Image 1 (tube, rainbow, N blue to C red):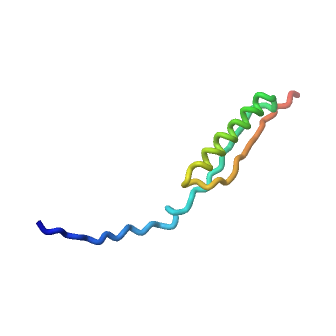
Image 2: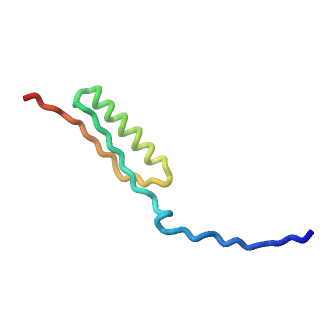
Image 3: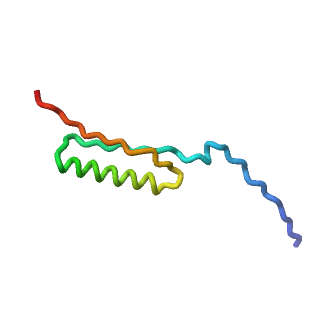
Length: 72
């Protein structure tokens, strides 16, 4: 049995496939109460950490918002 050796040339990748995706997280709570602010902090920690742990993502930022409704 005769062996055949072939040279394999890898496919060229497009530049867009090699660039990391810029990712941001958005956290929001409905009031400024302590429990809600703790929830906002937990959201920021969770999603910020997830973004930073994913190699194909570039951490852009975390957006946070506490929505206060004022009584009239």
